[in-house]
Image (cartoon, rainbow, N blue to C red; front, side):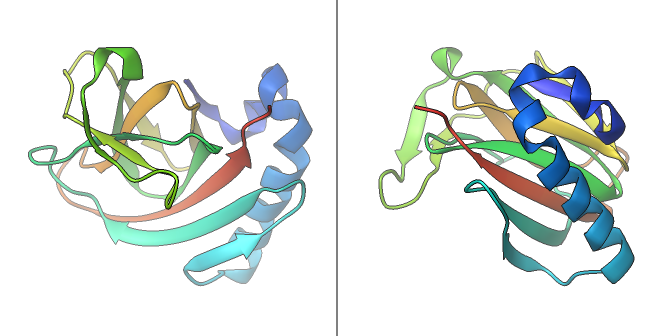
Length: 152
């Protein structure tokens, strides 16, 4: 798991190959105010532009993915994303291979990241994560989730 500002993406070896693709799309989204939806990019990467309200943690579940890493960029708003190694979580619903998502019990409150506008969180298949959780009450969010293919 990595959490940082987008302009520091160059610091992370595992993200260098995708840095230009991600940053160009972030810039495009800011300039063009792209609507919600899926946008296919290069190198197998796609972006999901999402607008939603944050939610309370109660009843939420951890998730992970096998085929893609998540790079979750905050375009507007602030949210908590809880995370924990999947080795510490119990699977509640495995949607693979039909969908690239596995759900887990809520986990503990050991770790969360507070992501604000301009920041990203990067989650690998080993990182259970619970996004969209309110930080200071329910608020409207705009997020871009970049799906980056897992290398074989």
